[in-house]
Image 1 (tube, rainbow, N blue to C red):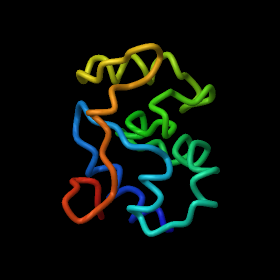
Image 2: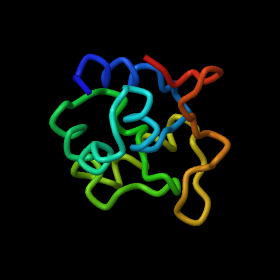
Image 3: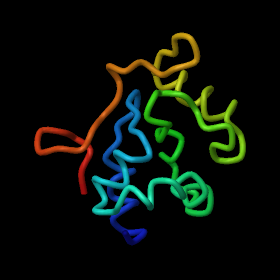
Image 4: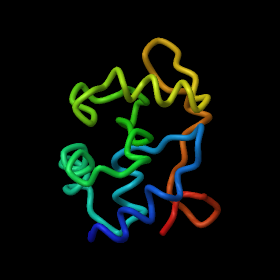
Length: 103
């Protein structure tokens, strides 16, 4: 999975939505093994929409972009609602032919 494809997938996540690490990796043509290291890779990549990538259960990783509280604030400003520490499932994008989450 190259950075160009990863960037294209991140660009496809609209404001007020989120995707899981696995969703992003699969949409970019990667493997589940690559999903485990995506949090660190996103931090290095510095993409403006990297805060829209969460754990599959809608929680923010403890090390998300080096500042999980900032990630939550950004998502809330974009309209993502949180309930019991989880982003609303209705705002999640998953890869697939009918999804906006794509390359």
